[in-house]
Image (cartoon, rainbow, N blue to C red; front, side):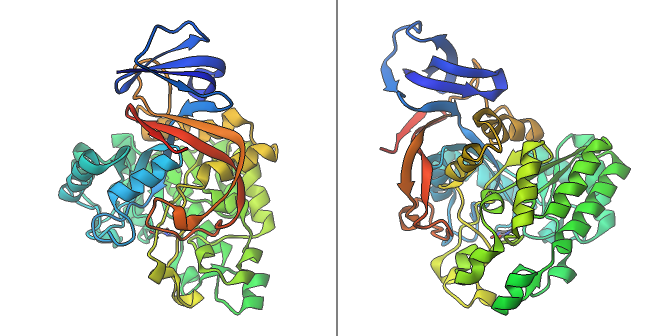
Length: 424
Ligand code: DOR
């Protein structure tokens, strides 16, 4: 089966391509990019007039919830939701039940993904058994089973010696250690950013230092070990500054942020909408400005969703008792496009941070439209505005603070491993 995507604007940062060209797909692979009208005859034609044609997005930070929390999300619903958002590669964090700290859970996830997944799934293995910070997992066995990185996401690695060892191994195996930076004593009991707004609302705050002391620690350990450190979900100005300084010194650190951290401020929590409750919390205007600057000057390398679907019952509670997390797959691209509209990033740089850069960090063959690559493509109309209806998300997690927001940028079609999904 051959498919030609024509009349679109192909943007592929991995090859420095931006122009009106045609993209040819042959079964599950990219065959090549041709000057308009120069491609051979094909079985099927997709007209991408008025759209950009880009590599399927690579989301290096997601929660698919299976095994154990299938009432929140499954590998099937999660990957379908991702594909709806133009995302064709998802890396899933290990905080499932059981936790993905063993070869058998990794195999379970990969088997399920092969059978039911709508796109490519790469498991991220736990750094420590049970995410308890007591002992390292069998890192090499997990890698051989198919994990592509390690993280205790949802929990920090409290024990600094264990983090040091993990970073030492990361150098040997050449895979990143993805750090959820949180000092649990400083954040204890907190439900939102600590500051003026938390005081007004009478909610217990999480200080920015809860994140920053751990960013500083992990950068120090990375410097000591010469390992590979990736900082997850950066939310504060202080973290951006620490990472920028570390990169200047040549420390092998990369970082990501998520759409909610460059779109929202803690003032929005005045609504007491529990869909705004996320960890790390949404910060202040100064933090948002620093994150945007960090994205612009490449201190922050990657945009990832931290897709964290929760059941309605987990969110429809008092603010203090509600679960942390935002269902992010189906709004991520449009929110990121906001950065382009504001002149923070150009379209190519935005797409780079959501395709080839995470692929390079994880050393996976994704995020490119080069000949021979997997046929993962997103066809997106960047001019159309729509109103978000989170109740219509494919994800089981309807927990979006962007419900009823007007956003620009609609995914028209996604092609995941050669399979065409038409959303219109
Ligand atoms: O808000 C969050 N939700 N932050 C995390 O680190 C974990 C995630 C989850 O698993 O729900």
